[in-house]
Length: 263
Length: 321
Image (cartoon, rainbow over all chains, first blue to last red; front, side, top):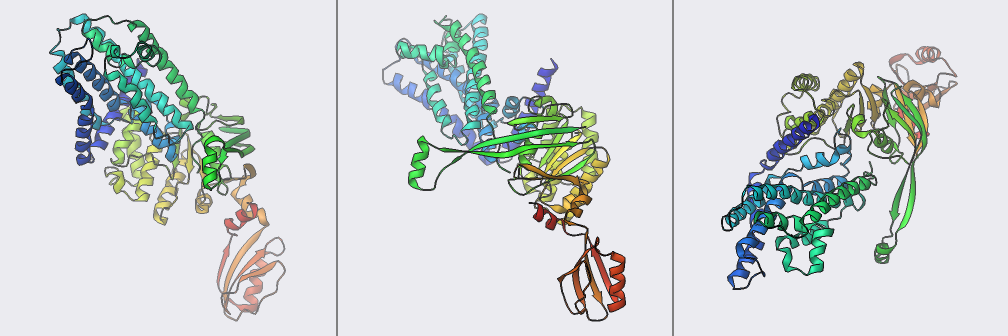
């Protein structure tokens, strides 16, 4: 219990300092806030264009597609806001040789890097996602208490997928310093989660469900909110846990190859 | 014994690449690995409350040793115990009791005042409110930064920033502090404040391991010096023993009433004949007693001014490196 409180205190302080840092340059903060918001609205706009032209994703209404995209943006926005910055945080520190300072602190380096990466700029993404989510939820059959509970539970799994990705990505930076294109690889893979997985081929669906659990980011949480019991849900949840522990193991294994910078 | 290091070795693998276009393309598929032995089996011990100067030229292995001692790096082989812990194995528990100031790596946060950054360490080290307040007040008054801790870090001078770095490193009252170039780039006043702070904390029982190229830091603070060169420990003794390394020498600068016709005296060597009446000489006090030599100078030339100094440590280090 004390450990959890200490962790919350660490994250609380990280958030407080992150807010102070972001607000030190108000102009930059406002510009980044709106850029994040607008850039993440691209895919919902594509969905609107597709459905507006009379086409559709087979078996999915516009509101259901927007629900998936809203959940995706909320998960990505929350990840970016609270912990995903650890990838850049660690990358920059390793390259500049100041990562040593993280290793001389008596706490988990992963948590410390995440707590010190809070970025208020990314709240634009979260708020945009929340807006689309509320719009979409208002236009589908109203979910019951059970559906909401299942949705919230799976939303935690969705965040765990982002957290695992952040560990895999930051882990590589200990060995391949300055690996600046890693985010594009991640972005390309996760963007498949913006659409219903059933529009892809069977083999690709299996890949997104059982190998790299991208379908858990938005498809599964949105599906249970609609009252469905999608195929492969439980197995995919299990895969998320395996993915998380594998990422954690990988990160610590890669940390051992950290050589610091000369000095 | 607080720190025990035995047969510590660390080997890095670097990759060599030529500068030509062909070399750049070739390096995509093949890179020549170079093994660099940064530490070749060094051993030493440090007692609680010591203030040890850790010296050596660039690339000697000082920083590697400090990084292993702070748990940042894994060694290739050897044994290290600090306060009963193996730094890289028991990292989280171990680092709770140590502090570190790296002159070229800041723990402060650029855009916000140091006092806000201190809160991060308060949370990390789980310092209770009352203890935090008391320690902060003490450190702020010792380092004279009352006015500066509420100013954004980017607006502070280097000296003010460095003093705040010390607060950041010592808020949790560590018993061992590693200092890596803590006075680099500072003016004499700022250096003096930092040195006086280190001295005060050392008198209160804090053990310091000081890595520096500023021999003023070592001369003013350290009682013991460890010298490392090319990954090997080449000297480990008191600062007095270091001074005596080149033999017992004194530097004598004298101004006289009568012109100084080059004096010939056993064990004496003229270093700088500044003018007809002023000269700097090196005296081997094992060959001739200082008293005798001064007496001779006064009798022959009439001393008007006299400075007697220890040989500069730089000269001794140059001969050792």
